[in-house]
Length: 325
Image (cartoon, rainbow, N blue to C red; front, top):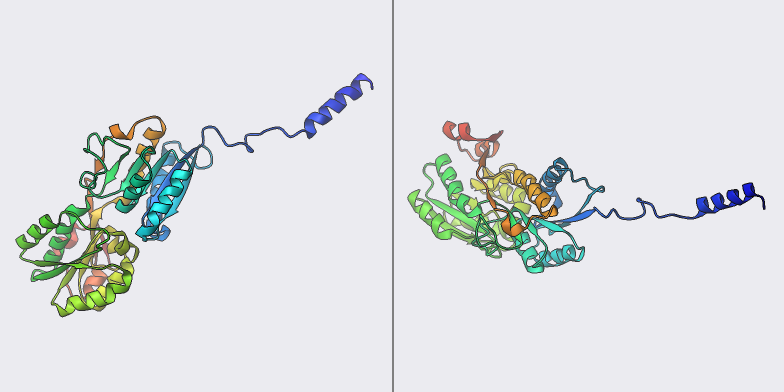
């Protein structure tokens, strides 16, 4: 074999021999981020996209330097422990939890993986953190001030219905609301009798609302619970069918309820991206202050109000961030 043939054969071997490539091997910088939603993809898609947008703004690109592992509980609390365990098994670097029950499920599933709350109730009352300034554990992020808003929703109903005397607070006993004493105090100040009514499943909506009418209930305040959020349209439609004005979380008015009032959860999930970014860069969640929602939004569904024969006060309409005709 002459010299030219020798080099030709070597080159042929080199070309035919498979070499490891970047495409074939995971990037050493690829980080896994978990997302656990207590509701469904259709309900919380905007929250997940807000998180993704926030991460992109900070230079985290899916498929390039991050992978987002998403799990939905579809409004079924019983699924959350299994889904949380799945995310732990995937060795994620951090998990974003959407919903109080999702946060609690992640807390029970791991003591080492950082958890960023996209939306959760009072973290101190829930035992998720020792303080807002220094959470002290593996959980940080944003709280939506859920309990504080129940009294305000009742106040908005009273403003729309000055003669309102009897209202129901619809709650899921699987997710006991906090701050009930304060809510009842606020109801008395408004001269409204507020009765707590429990509903365990969507199949109970119709009979429960029918029973409310029989007991003289004139309006409904809906708890900010996953079951009610997932079934908001069905609940709002039944309330209208029984001619009961209702108020709930911000998205509730979009589903057909008369009043929606609450924190901007979508923006909260965008803000959650800043926590994820800091944690991926080495920050400890115990030292990242928890943010409390400082701005709430009011959405009025005037179409629903008209159906119910309620003339919404101009002063209330003027304060609304959004009006649905």
